[in-house]
Image (tube, rainbow, N blue to C red; front, side, top):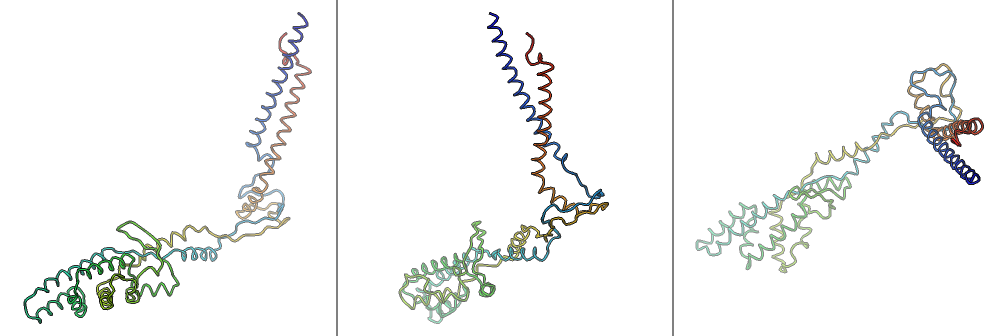
Length: 336
């Protein structure tokens, strides 16, 4: 029985020792972490602007610090950012509706003239007056009146107007300005649909160049005279429906420039270069150099502080364990 009790006592003693060692280890680890994080400054001096240094300070390595803002370089980058912003234009669909209404009104007005029983001179006068009220020259109005199927021609006219004005008609001076500035793409805003898209200039119609794109008009008109008449009518009734949005363009360019961060002149500091002389007062410029050194040294300082404090705490814990082991063994073994 006595042997069994001694064996059990021995096992309890070993387990107690292990548990105490583990507790000591984790306590040591936690203390090291807390102290190292809380008091990193223990291993380095702390400088403040206005302090007077007690000894000269030299650069321990080569490094760079920010100097004054390079206004010229910053403005150059801002200018480049602004130049990347595309000009903003808006398309006014109300212009298209006005043109469609004008053309439809003209065709509706001349239709009853086919059955007009008055004098030929009076009929011609009515055609002229009706055409002029819609901005259509008399030769064009007269040719339309003489068509065999004016309804089909009206349908093709409406389709052509929809096609051209949905793409957008830009004023010739605006297009010339864009070409001069070597701009190939613009931003086109359709406020009625709340849509914004990029448009290549080739996709737009130049107001004075509609005749140049006559082949893009209705392909269903085979008669050359009727197609020429359609082009004449388009040239007479169409109006630019794209306008430059100067305020919106300027706003976007200023926003792009505002995103550019200042560019600083970089100051080179060489190893062993004198930063502060003994008795010199620390200025703002000195602080910038000291902080640069501090930031580069900070990881190594933390590592040194961690292991240094770990060594001190470990030695302290070891001293306590050895003291208890040799002078107060009852604290580990417990009461028998």
